[in-house]
Length: 176
Ligand SMILES: Cc1cc2nc3c(=O)[nH]c(=O)nc-3n(C[C@H](O)[C@H](O)[C@H](O)COP(=O)(O)O)c2cc1C
Image 1: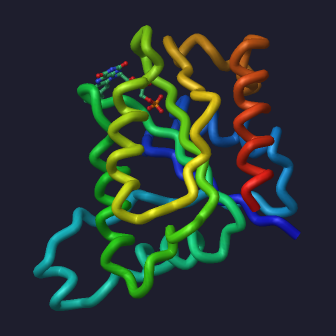
Image 2: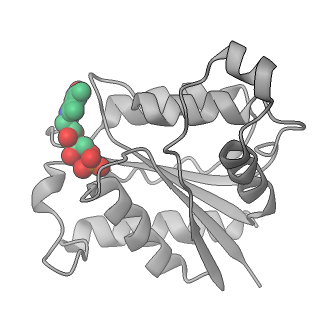
């Protein structure tokens, strides 16, 4: 029984990164696929001191710990990861233990630009370094011009992307 957790770095309802983690999950075909909610309060040390770790943050941390593998798809906001994603990573780092340690993790990106969020993906690798997950190094899935790359049923178009995503999911599975 495998559980896959998907984290989309975009809060937008029609997010192409959310579509991308769903496409990846469809290929991975875990017994259970869980989508994380990173619509969290902004990290604020005063809030943490007064009220402790918010329940939504603890839930996310527990979901990471319980997952056999995690996928993160990040948008590119000004050449880096989204603030929502960084905020979620910062909050989780405040929970007890480190749910990321050794966790099989595949990262990917979908962005409007021609490079498909390559710089954001690189910045995500850097942001994750502190937590020591087991990051699958490739192939890199960089969905460029992402608004045009999903059909009306939200399926990822194009043989190239689907092949890359398949290889990435195979590599992720091999880490479990
Ligand atoms: C604040 C902001 C900054 C952005 N900066 C970039 C960028 O540096 N490179 C890029 O390719 N797209 C950039 N975009 C466009 C995003 O790639 C595009 O909105 C994409 O669809 C976001 O992912 P989503 O569909 O999952 O929401 C930016 C968008 C926003 C809102």
